Structure formats: C-alpha cells, structure tokens
Image (cartoon, rainbow, N blue to C red; front, side, top):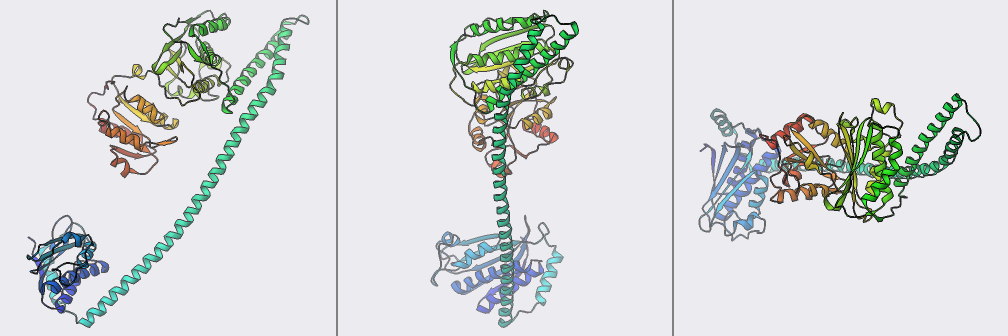
Length: 594
C-alpha cells in the first residue's frame, strides 16, 4: 500500500476549506495544470462538505498510487447513516434533502464527472467511503520516496490561507475559467465559420461536378449522334467507291493495264477497310445511344452453326492451312433470343481467330452452362495473348502489338462490340489464352431473352484454378484497381477471382471457398457493409478472413463488423502480400472448392 501523504480531520466548515486548499497545493506540487488543480480542489471540497454536512465529521487522506496510470488519489470517509440508493445518485436521478445520509446529492455525481477514477462504498448505518483520483500529468512516472518526502516538506511550509484569501483565490480561478471558456467559444465560432466556408465550397464543388456530369452526358450523346449520322453519310460514297472499283476490276468498260489493276485494287481494299470501320462505329454508336433493337426469336444452335459454316467457307479458301471445325451441339435447348446478334458475336470471334491463326484449327462449340446459359466457344491454335493484354482487348480501338498484327488491318472494335452485344442479350464474354499455344473466346448467352439485365454470369472458374495457390476473392468494380491486384499477386502464392458486384460475389461463394476476401466498400450503386455482416454471421463463411480496401476512412466500423484487416487505397504491394500471408498463415495453399 502506498504511503499517505497527508491526513485531515473534518470537524467544522474551516476544515472543509483547509481540505480544499491542501488538495490544490498538492496538485500544484505534483505538476498538475491550473485547470486540473481547480477540478481536484473542487471535488475534494464537495465530498468533504458532504461528510461534514450529513455525518458531522469525516477524514480526508491524500496519496499517490502506482498503477497504469499512476494517480493522485483522495479518500474521504465518514461514519454517518450511509446512503440508501447510491446508483440513483451516480446516475443523477436524485438530489438529497438535508435528512438523507452522507455523500448523497449533486456533489457525488459532479465529482464523478471531474475525476478519472471514482469509487463509492456506502450502506445504510455503515457510513460512506468515497475514493477518487486523477492521472498524474506525466503518465508512467511514479514519484520516488525522496520526491514524496520533498512534496510533504514543501506542503508543511505552505501556511493555510484565511477565508478571505481562499475566496479571493476561488474568484481568480473562476475568472480564469471564464477566460478559458471565452477563448474556447471564440475558437468554436472561428471553427464554425471555417466549416461554413468549407460547406459552401463543397456545395459549389458539387454544383460544378453536376454541371460537368451534365456536360459529359451531353458530349456523349452528341458523340453518339455524330457517329451515327456521319457513319450513314460515309456509307454512301464508300459504297460508290467499292462498286465502281469492282466494275473496273471486272473489265466492264474495257481492259486495264497491270499497273491500273494494282492501283484500283489498292483503292478497293482501302475503301473496304474504311467501310468495316464505319460499320463497327455505327453499331457501337447505336449501342451507346440505346438504339439497338433486340428482336428475339426461337432457333436451334445447329441451324446457327450451319449458317455460319456456309458464310465463312469463302474465307478459308485464302488459307488452306487452317481447319474450321463446328462441333455438333447435343442436348441443348432451343434459344429464344436475337439470332442475328448472336451470329454477329460469333462472326467477330471467328474473324479474329482467322487473323491470328496461321495454321492449325479453329473450333466452334456450344455447351449448356449454369442458369440455362448457352456458352459458345471459339478456340484457335494461333499466337495467343499475353495475360496483361487479355483485359485490354475488349476496350475500343485497342490492338495488341505483334508480328502478325503488323501485317493485318483491323479497327480494334470487333471484340468491344461483341462484349456490348452480349451484355444487351443478358450475357457476357471472356477469354482464356496462352502465349504461343492459342486463344479461346467465350460468349455466355441466356437461352431465353428476358429483357435488359445486369450480367452476373462468370465462366466455369473452378476448372482454371491452380490447386497450388490460395484463392483470393476480390469484390471490386474498378478495372484499374483489379489490374493492379493482378500485377501485385502475379507469381505469388495467391490467385485472383474477381466479382464486380455483390450479387456476383454471393453467387461465387457457394462454389468457391476463398482463402481471403478483399472487399471494396463503395461499389457502383451499392455499399458492402451489409455483405460483410452476412459473411461474418453465416457459419459457412465466418472463418474466411476479410480485408477491407477502400477509399472510405472508417476503420472502426469495418473492424466492428468483423473485418480482419483494413487499408485505405491505394494499397501497397509489399503490405498486401505480407497481410495476405498473415491472414492465411499458409502451410498448404491449396483451396478445395465446396
């Protein structure tokens, strides 16, 4: 037990004043600031006055107690009638009349608010003990015995002040408190003015953003309108050039010299390339402008393949080293969707495969996927695509640099158009490729067209997972961020499965038990707080670590909902790899699908 620095008996009003003075003097010697000195002195005065008023006498002890943190502690004891309902007083629900036992009233609840530590023990007929304290100004520095002895000696040299001097001191403390309050009010007023200025700036920024969004929307509409109109305007002269070139090459108006034939052929080829570009631009403009009309009808996949086989046969005559194979579909239901759009998607896939396959085969097939999706596949034995380029090829005007590409003409619009058309039909497209081995392009189309809908279908990912790497499910709708994650984890113990929406993530979880979930909070049109609660409340997914990586700085909320780690974007590669290793504690990184 730590030694008591000073003990005072409370027998009269003057002893209450003395207890207040000694409390303030000790607080000053222990290094407390003026404001804390006033708080401690006021608390001691209130509890000592209660002891004198209700018990007639009491004892006040001052000591410094070691702990975490070390504190200046005051104990006030009396042998009065005690308190009947201590809890009511602590909660501020009771103000005592004079007949109630010691320690009751507002002094107790006020002291509890002023102090860092507070404890009261009281029972009817057994007196009251109130112990309260405040942490020392320098945490973790408990005074030595020599320091406590010096404090005791200094306290003995401090003569008690007269009642008049005590009143003057309290007045000075009151004036200081009022000045401090005035200063804080001034700072608060300044802060309010700054907040008002900030709010006005934010409102102005939002207004500017709204204007910019309207401007971009109008610009997008104008672009689509321009492309649509100009594409039609370009078609007329282009068709004339193509037709006149064909007449000349067919010698309808007489023979051509070899040089003239070469020149006319160049004109015809250039016009054809420009015509292809105009057609693709027109289709994209129609999609963006919402002018594509879906005309669903019922048809068989076998009939679609038959039409494509006849349509594409002339292209094979230019390259006898390629074998075009249509696998006969079996056990497929009839499709009810827009046959011309499905055909357009497959034609783009096959034309792309023909460009980049110099020999071997191109195989076209169709299988039944989950949720009554018909999965069309066009597989080639061509040059293949680098992993980092596989996402880019579905962006407008993107063409991958390669020796074969340098010899070919293209617009870079065929694959983006196929993606847009598939989405209009309620499906999606994707690619699997290995450099030097070949590529497989897939289009998953609902067997029954049900109108425009969001796309949630994903390829049969379990077939492509590496059993030697832990699977990370990334719920993220930003393509650039996903690309960074892919680069960060390339060559590591982890492999990525991405979900752009919460519905996709919920659909993937029953088929795939990831080692970790990386979760963005602000997805397009939805936030992920509820989804994270679902993960942690569901017994099947409760054990999956969740790493929240987002722009929303709310770590406390994320951790309270069960997140295992939190990071503000952008995420650093080294930190991410270390955190994934820590969360998974990988011994055997293989993940078994469920």
